[in-house]
Image (cartoon, rainbow, N blue to C red; front, side, top):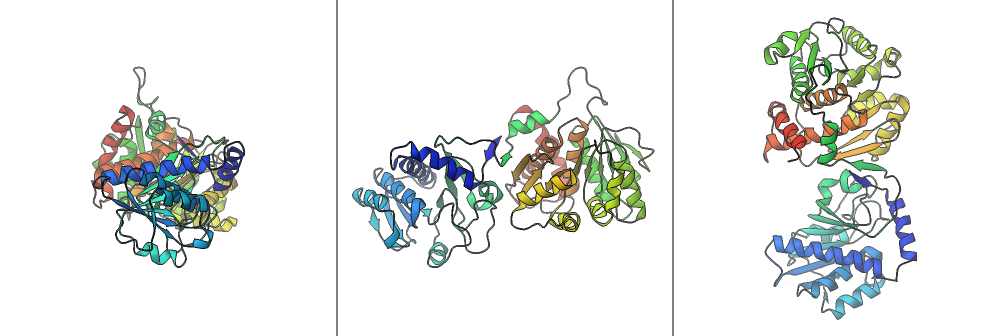
Length: 474
């Protein structure tokens, strides 16, 4: 699990290290890391000999990092040109080091094999401004960003105008929020250790080993009941496919037993004969967790279903129409057993339906918004998006950055809710269950897509392969 810290906390930790470090030593260590990763990128794209790197140099320490990196690159016989955005405020020591090493000052970016973005640092906010925006628009070479792509908000990942899209981002000391909230802008993020002392992170990012720990693997004494029984209350005459997808995900996630309750029982039985399918929640039998809401509808009958599920006293994943019902009828919360965990899985519009009546708005800081709703309702919130945010009522927060856009199709959310329900039924902690489900959901999409857009059904079919891959460690 990788920890992520807000930039203010990282800067304070850097200040403490700087106080006991020789002047310039920390910058040179950071710049050496930038140079090494720039060399790796050059090797991947044609080798080092005869190549040319252009530095986009702003004011302050980021510009100094870029200039020192250029000096290190010159020692490897790479041609280096620095484009100074404000010559009167350039980092003097870094520029002197570059010129001593044989680097040049210029203004063209078109001939670069790699560009190093040292325009602005962590204190900057807002989009790139002229002349930096115009300069970046002319770049055609891959970009290595120093600490963070310029124009990307470091704490929220928000981009509201011209900004850099990097092939590689080399960051220092600790990961910052934008590295995962704006992963598509940062590219391959590489961390250079600076020996910072940091306490508990602001949020964490799961690695495959964390997902494997959450996924329950049956042992020799397990049976279908000890492995977890999940109930699914979803689908309708209008949307039977939502039930089929949510149930299928629970089955594919290797829940011990899956029960279905709803009007799509015939469709579910036809697709998943191993499922115990009934018409109502009351007839479904005992479960360790429920999934409720996908394709359920928002009428009075659906309200009764949601009320019955919440009253059952087990962990519950509420998705789609279930979230809309909770937003429109907050009295439904009265049926909830206060000791039973609830996971909400909204997309942005569903989030607004349930959060805005409580005075919580979804702005650019998605992490803060998810945390606020989780705390207010005493639930775990899985806020879907290109970077999925999982916030628990105790403040624990995970972010799962998508590595593609393959999940932006109808029905994929139903699959995610089924995965969450299966993990809840196995006894997983709600935050861990939501995070592991989100991670595996993305992995299944990658396996199904193979580099091209794909619909929900192939993603569901890829879930067993994704589970097998993660639990086997490969």
